[in-house]
Each structure stands twice: as structure tokens, then as C-alpha cells.
Length: 405
Image (spheres, helix red, strand yellow):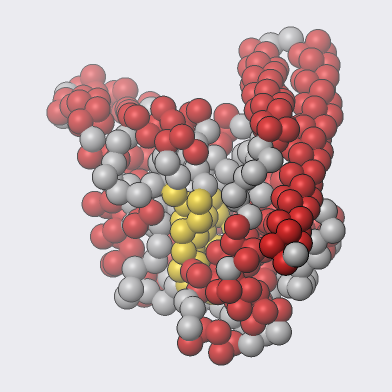
């Protein structure tokens, strides 16, 4: 009789997971539809009131992003109807996983003698992701509240999207934990030198207006580089007002993609940098974004970090999470990126994972590599941003860092 009972229990488990996941995708689709309709109506109204090139561009961007969000959400929901025997939750039965979750729930730091920060971070994320998607499952892990204000700092060309990177996750923390957040304005096509000045202006002004608030900087992609340059330039101020920095998919040590033949060919224009025409145009506009490319170059950034890491302010923590995905796991734009920027290294479609972690000579907290493509921070991403940000809070608290938050 035992095998029959086991089979029945297994079937009931899969049925529960199937129904929960299907409902989760339905809720996501409904949210995408409501938000997209609202945004589209607002964009149309703005264009009618002020018909110009700016409002028209905003309207086109809104309609494009909304259509993409709804279509992807619809496909995900339809797929959930036939995805009965999915294997995405097999980790639940793993003894190591359960051991980590038990230790984190009990604040038992002895677990570090057996597992490193990356393994613990991944286990906590999987647990919280499962809790969000499975009805009736209440995690043993509690999400701590912090007093700091979360600052979102986006990356390259985030202007293409409707919201700052990871704002959906930040909104969840505000709704569930009352954690305040703001989004810094940076230019995705400008250099780290340029954006570090923008960050200084905005964050200093914010601190003057809110003198009792400390800041937790959450940086995505190139936003992490811009932030590191800002912190180096504003060391004294940062040590007074910034509690810590967390980067997600940031090329901390730069990117090797700029060494590809396509960029070498494009950058051949710089052979004419001593000509009068080049100098004239370059004074008006950064030709081919030379400074921008330098900011991302692994040759430049890895050397910059090695030279300047001791000049960075002494904050309570610097943490880093990287991403990796196969081409078939990626957003359609990331599939194209992987084709253009082919790499022998593991990557998320844009950033090589080896460059997304802090080097050994720097006292940063490498929280490892999670499965995910480079666009998981967009509002339309099905990736569980909510669980990812919650995992940061749990992990920093477990490492006794968020006591300083």
C-alpha cells in the first residue's frame, strides 16, 4: 500500500503546484493588462493635449512596451495550462536546501562552515520565489524591515523602458514592509564620469531634504559602475549617508564585448581624431560614445577598480549578484544580443558572470550567480523581482549587515 500512497501524494503535490503556478501567471497577466491599459490611456491623453515629437515618442514607447508585456504574459499563462509535470520545484526535496532554510530561519550562522554566501543566497531566493508562486506555502523565513531608503540606479539605455530597473520589486517592499524608495536619474548612453556627477547632485539634494534618512543603493548593470565612480569621488559624504551598495548584473570589472570585431570596426572612426572635422563634431557630441565605451571596457574598468578600490568609502557592505542564462532562456532581445556578442564565458546575454563579482583583493560580498537574463529588472519581466529584493534583505540581515541598515 505504501507505494500507492506515495504515488497519490506525489500526484497531489504536482496538482497543487500546477494550479498555483497557473493562478500566478493569471494574476501576472491581469496586472500587466490593467497597468498597460492605464499607461496607454495616459500617454494618449498627453499626446492629445500636447501633440509634439516628445509626446509622440513617449506614446510609441508606451504602446510598444505595453504590447510586449501583455503578449509575453499571455504566452506564459497559456503555457502554464500544459506545464503540469514541470521540474522547476524539485529543489524542495533536497536535503541541503532544507538544511540551509532551517539555519537561516533560526539565524544559525554555523551553516557558513558548510555552505558559502552564494549557496545560501540562492537557496533563500528559491524558497521565497516558491512562496510567492505556491498557494498555501508559508516560508519559515521572515522578511526583515529596514530603516534605510532604497535608491534604484539603472543601467544602459534604461530610457527604452517604462520604469527604472527593479521598480516593481521596490514597490512590493514598500507595500509589504513600508520601505521607502526613490529612483535616481542617470543617462544610459553617457559615461560613468558623467553619471557620477548626476548621482552626486541628486543624492546630496535628497539628503539635504531628508536629513534623517540613510541610503541603500541598489544598482543594476552599468548603474553599478556609475555608482562606484560616484562613491570614490564622494567618499566622505557617502560614509555619512550611504549604508551599503548592492549590484545586480553589473560588470564590476568591465565588459569584454567591446573587444569584438564589430566595435573595433566602428571605432576605426577614432583614427581621424586629430582632424579638424572630428574635433569640431566631437566638441559638440561624443562621437560613437567614446567615453561611454571606455566606462564599460574591461581593460579600463578592471584597472580602475584595482587602482581605486582602497579609495572607496568604508560602507557596511558591498554586495554583488550575477546572472547567467542560455540563449533559449532569454528575452528575445537577449537572444539577439547573445548572437551578436558571442562569448565563451557564462553570461546573461550582456555581462559575463566572471566580471559581475568583486575580485579577491576587495572585501565585498559575492552572493553568487542566479539563473536569469539581463532584462529581469524590467517591469514586464516574469522574473520574481519581489523575491530577489526580499532575499537581499534576508541575506544582509543573516550576515548581520542589515542591522546597520
